[in-house]
Length: 260
Ligand SMILES: O=P(O)(O)OC[C@H]1O[C@H](O[C@H]2O[C@H](CO)[C@@H](O)[C@H](O)[C@H]2O)[C@H](O)[C@@H](O)[C@@H]1O
Image 1 (cartoon, rainbow, N blue to C red):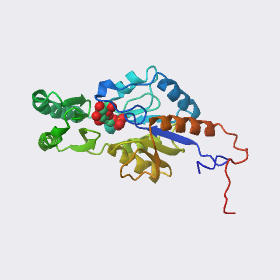
Image 2: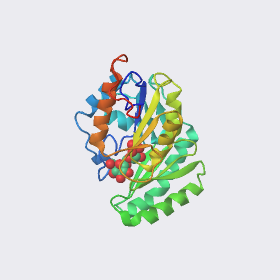
Image 3: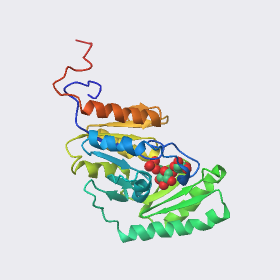
Image 4: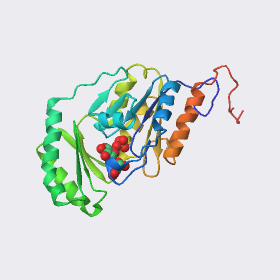
């Protein structure tokens, strides 16, 4: 379909993860290096895909705005607990979800204070506990998180890259992708989702069930039908898909079926 490159190029809705997909993984959440040209690349993608471009991330929407300023993209943040639609409106977050995440974050603080290599990231609607700088404490982090969730059964645990996160039950990147796909300018397009992490699997599945493609960056088991090597290749793919989006639908196909 996409490889055809001729008259049948579908109108794409492009969704990407942020950490590990648009930017390289760093030692701590604040230490990421956001390439100076990333905003320009994404602005171009917005034009190429008629604004049907969104970020689905574990980070908060406000952080994506900070890193990609002045752009204010459609974003699903905190693994879908937060969502800003393409028209700029925000989906309301239940007060119980905000207070639940807050209470979980507070209950994890003693372990983080006792172990400076651990980091609690409190978000509106989710909580991450990072152990990248203390990998030997992964077991303690799992135990502390499981204990914290006993009091908050409306949250579930999701493992990420050297991190364990609590997110509200019923919210994930797949549900967020499906919600975007019911709205303008995404509706009626073919979804593509690019991600690198286990928390991206729901969105690969959703994109593919809606007739599109999941693209997994790097190695590891995945339901995604395609794989991509690294962040630079993601930039190249966005550029290439953008070029295809502008291709004259009447032009000769770039590829033809060799079996006929
Ligand atoms: O869904 P994503 O956009 O991939 O966000 C997932 C989490 O990313 C961040 O943590 C990860 O990246 C950090 C910076 O590279 C790294 O230090 C950490 O070990 C990774 O787990 C972010 O801090 C989390 O809030 C996101 O949920």
